[in-house]
Length: 218
Image (tube, rainbow, N blue to C red; front, side, top):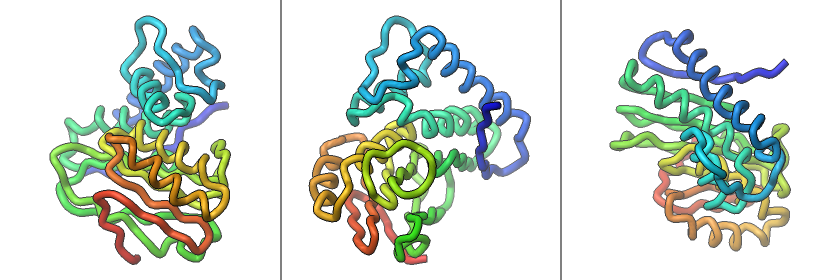
């Protein structure tokens, strides 16, 4: 049995609408996988072959920009699909899907960073200020959770205007980090992605941050 577990903060209850959007997003992805089974397993960027739903195109674009497979963006893509679908009924919307967060707010919010056994875990947060467009705040880890990571970073958190891209970029950066000396090259690589606003890397007692971020103590 498969499941999707979202946490949603909105101005009013909207569980029924959220459930419908979750089913829609999963249906679109699962239907595409039936046509192209390799979409779910490839670790390489995916090239769209013929017509495809927008959520599939977003995942493929994210993978192409970051050099990873499209499923590296699936959690962020679903969070954004649901969040955008609900925005018409709520002035503020936060959708969290396994550490990948779609944020559309009219007042500042702080998102804490969970980094497993690192002493920095839960000590820092990203202050997200209201803007004209929603943002994605996505985290990948090589030491926490069940998602595939080729690295050993405790947490890589990426902020982008695209939740799909933030998710894929977090995976791609985390894949590059096994030792502390890998952090600087990973930051330099991430800076080359124009659509990424910034990010935070935590590995053990080491932290690196770049971009237009407001990092605050919790």
